Structures are given as C-alpha cells and as structure tokens.
Length: 244
Ligand SMILES: Cc1cc2nc3c(=O)[nH]c(=O)nc-3n(C[C@H](O)[C@H](O)[C@H](O)COP(=O)(O)OP(=O)(O)OC[C@H]3O[C@@H](n4cnc5c(N)ncnc54)[C@H](O)[C@@H]3O)c2cc1C
Image (cartoon, rainbow, N blue to C red; front, side):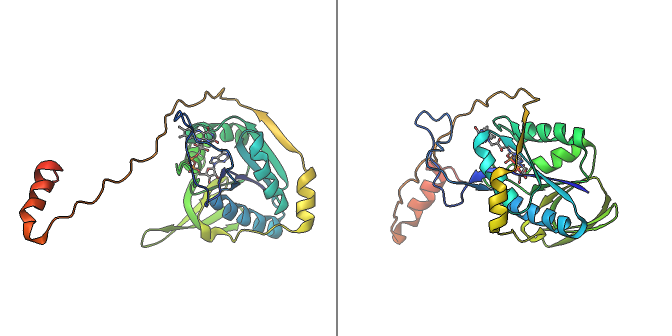
C-alpha cells in the first residue's frame, strides 16, 4: 500500500505574528516553524498502517527549501520517502493542484491531509485533492479502518459522528483523534539527516500572490455612562453607532 501524507509547515503556535513594515507579507524573521499539528495526527495514522500492513509512506510539501526541515522531522518518526514541490505556496488551490499532479503520476492508495493548516486555515486542500483526482475525500476523519480496499471512516461532526464507507483510493483529512503524534527516536533522528528529498519543479508556474496585510485596529476606548443617564446610552447606540 502506498500512502501519501501532505505536510504543511506552519509557525509555532507560540509565535507572535508581525507584518513587514510595508504590509507586503508576514515577517518570518525569528519565527520558529513546526509541522502543522493536524498533519502530525495524519502521519501517526500512516505510521500505524506501516506497522500493521507494511505501507510505504511518502511525505510531500509544497514549499521552498526551508520547509525541508519539516519533512526531515517526518523521516525521524518513520516516513520512508520525501518530496518537495519547489514553489512558494500561495493558495490552497495551487497547493492542491501541485500535489494532485504528483499523485496522478505515482498513484497512491491513500492520501492524508490535516483538516486545516493552522496559519491560513483554508481547510480546503484535502477536498480539492479528491476533486482533482476524481476520488472520494472524507473530511474531519477521526477514525479509519481498512479491510482490503474498503475503508470505514468516522467523521467527527458537530453533535455526533458520521460513518462513511468508501473504496480506496481515498483522500482523508485528519482531526486530532485520528492518531497520537509520534515522538522521534534516536535511530530515526540519525536516519532523517541522510534520507534524500526529491525536489520536483513547479508544474503550475505559480506566481506570487499580491496581498496587503495590516494589523487589526486597536479597540476604541470605553465610554462610561452614568446609570442615571440610560437615555444617553440609547442615543449613542442608535444615532452614533447605528446599531438599531
Ligand atoms: C494570499 C496568500 C499568500 C500566501 N503567501 C504565502 C507565502 O508567501 N509563503 C508561504 O509559505 N505560505 C503562503 N501562504 C499560505 C499558503 O498559501 C498555504 O500553504 C496554502 O494556501 C494552503 O493553506 P490552506 O490554509 O489553504 O490549507 P488547508 O486547506 O487549511 O490545509 C489542509 C491540509 O492541506 C495540506 N497542505 C496545506 N498546505 C500545504 C503545503 N504547502 N504543502 C503540503 N501540504 C499542504 C496539509 O496537510 C494541511 O493540513 C499564502 C496564502 C495566501 C492565501
């Protein structure tokens, strides 16, 4: 069984995000990067399949060379092969197209993504991949059982669970219940350093996104109104703030 796990590199959750002075992008100086947490849950499930069924795990990232550190972290917990599509990721659609191009050529039985990246929170790459490849995609998957080519997926949805039965090949986007992230061992860390990462050219000729960023405006100061002047409060809400 061939399994592909999509790995997004995101700023560490404790990072304070600041924008460049001209608002043209995020200032990544001094930002510590991590593997997107939902992707770690996906990788943990892939590792389980490797242990139980001998699955071969490939990890893939769309990004520049600095993202290879995240692929190496995945090697350290047991991923077998690594692919980096050499493009600046600028949208979920572009990322999905680039991964789909690779998947079409190499045909995987199972493709995992996280339910969303914790930086841009698009929550779209998994479903787009399913559409582009013409195969089923199951989002928000917290449990996956395989029986030959048949997959039983449990989706954790608001107020309940939904069980979906589908055939492989399949795209699954992981929530945290799918697998407990693995801690790398010393042997894995040593091997991770030397495993090759295949670099593939950007088949979409992606262009940089033209965006402007600005920090949210500070909150306006509080206005205190004496309880005896409730009419004044109504006047402000109605005439000044136009709330009703
Ligand atoms: C306007 C704009 C400008 C951007 N500029 C930059 C930039 O300059 N540099 C930069 O690094 N990012 C940039 N990004 C973020 C980049 O576009 C995201 O990686 C991409 O859009 C996917 O994020 P998402 O939130 O839509 O993914 P989601 O759909 O939320 O991700 C779901 C899952 O898809 C997979 N996935 C997501 N991204 C990748 C990836 N890159 N490689 C492999 N798997 C992935 C992961 O498994 C992830 O858990 C930009 C985004 C926007 C909207």
